[in-house]
Image 1: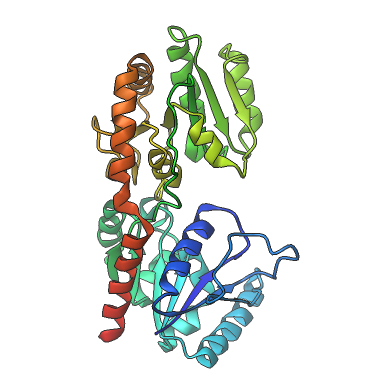
Image 2 (image 1 turned 120 degrees about the vertical axis):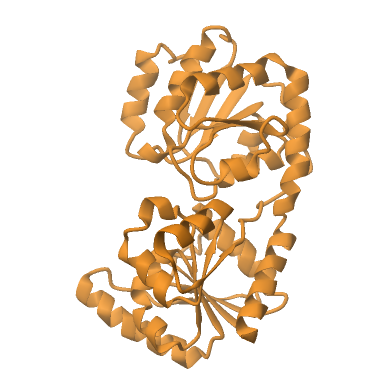
Length: 354
């Protein structure tokens, strides 16, 4: 079977690029796999490394409306010439370049949803995908249910979660008095609410630190909030780092304050390091990843007081931290890349057998 994965930029470093890399490398054991990047090649060959068996190709698209139409014809010709069995869009938004491909049914077309349909259901790309794709792959059960409820698709809906990128040999020690949070400094992540929770927490835990790593449009606003809350010496706002594994190892609690998610990779990564997590019950992901009270805590979405309380429980009870961290590392193995790749293999073989 010949597979073509499509992504905006194969040289990117974000979560979608990371997951595509893991899945494509794993599936190359069984299928002929190609990655089509809709951007120009990178001069420094940045991005996650692919196995030699995985072919990387490039077909830059035009972003304007007229250019988009032209790109549709170029891509349709590319698909026809390549004789692919399945085309998988790593991001539903890219379907605007595959309108002709979808209508001509040149190959099985799959839209791989990495976002949250409840936030984006009115967008044309989701509505077109629901009607003309052969299948939609979501990351959570809730998002699969939301696709069916909001768009009533003709496409088959299937949930396959993302894999954990790595299972470290050495877990976090859980001795440092540090709470960690990672993510883009944007409205979605609601780091302002995390700072409010930490400010209340810090009144009784003055030897604990909060470290937030990320970049984005809310940086100045968040720095001002740190100052206004009197947290300049206890809350750090640092730029992203390539060495994110050291951040997990140096943390004792991971906190997530998002308004919504697709499938929070930082949550499963922290748990793989044995770091207990406290998270808002935002749509979608945390409640399907964390087993509340067993390997972490889930609190009502946006409930700052509840988040403060759970952070304090983990900070005050080292035995609880270690027990939850140990269970987190064990429970998260259900997301091992081998198991996720098998789900993809079974799905793809069943799809093409129809």
